[in-house]
Amino acid sequence: MVGKICGTGSYAPPHIMDNNDLAKIVDTSDEWIRERTGIVRRHVIQEETTSYMAGQAAMRAIEQSGTDPEEIDLILAATSSSETVFPCMACEVQKMIGAKRAAGFDINAACTGFVLAYNTAQAYISAGIYRTVLVIGAESMSNMVDWTDRSTCILFGDGAGAVLLKAEEGTPCRMAAYSDGKKGEALTALSRHRKGWEELTGEEKKSDKESYIQMDGQAVFKFAVRKVPEIVEELLGQENLGVEDVDWFILHQANRRIVEAAAKRLKADIAKFPMNLDEYGNTSGASIPILLDEMNRKGMFERGQKIVLAGFGAGLTWAACLTEW
Ligand code: ACO
Image 1: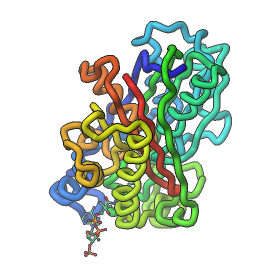
Image 2: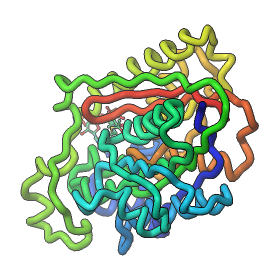
Image 3: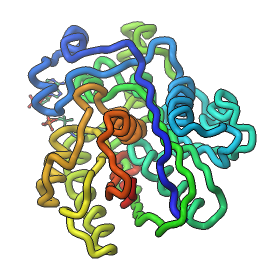
């Protein structure tokens, strides 16, 4: 058995901050941010919570698939920025969508979270345990960044995406996942409930900086550019496929230069690496399902197309899946 995507949905907060807005807060420029990252603007929560965004994305995926929420067996929610430690976000979404029969739990692996949740869903489906699984990625990164730190606050945005998988006869997906806890210090954030950045006083913004996202940008860059091609080649090798056999490489949207460098190392056509980080920035665990939903709603997928999903991020963690539309 294999899980086929039968519906996608996403939610981005309507409030937008573009690079020029950031240049009013920290010493940066539109030109620097575009050139180094490819990001132009990002959506930022105001009243929304992470669970609210997750619920909206989930409802859109369910509506598109025409599924009764009571058919859903399992809800997997990838997040590392939920306002609540418990109840978990999956249970909050269950309540919102009325998926009364579903089990649910969260997966926290930062930017790799969605791919790990997708792989977990596929594993349950191929084992014959569940048939209908909702997989969500939702993040409020704006609550986690230090808005006085120009090296990190320019990178991130908020949003949510979801896919609904249904079991069909077929070969299970190829999956792989790794972590390297010894390198975890390259990207950290302490668990602590935050106010919205606009509510913080100047002193609060300056104090306790270590509880915000701390990142060795160049170390993360090098890690991503090395590990993403490695894991993709591993999956393709298991199926005796080449990069030319893959229709889409859907990578975590951290930085345009990371995606371009990964494509170059793989010697693959960059046209097969869709990007939307100009619009959203890095939405961590939400970036891949938001991109999937955008592409799906534009009619860019055809049944049977081969798709590689690849995530990488804090932990350090990285994971990939070779899946079919
Ligand atoms: N505006 C202007 N100047 C800046 C800014 C900014 N926003 N941020 C840093 N600079 C300055 C630095 O202070 C430094 O100045 P100096 O030379 O006078 O010391 C200079 O620009 C170069 O800084 P670097 O950190 O070397 O810049 P780099 O080219 O490495 O780009 C970046 C930084 C964009 C963070 C890059 O390292 C990167 O993309 N790393 C990948 C990490 C990533 O995407 N993380 C996202 C989270 S993790 C994930 O999703 C997996």
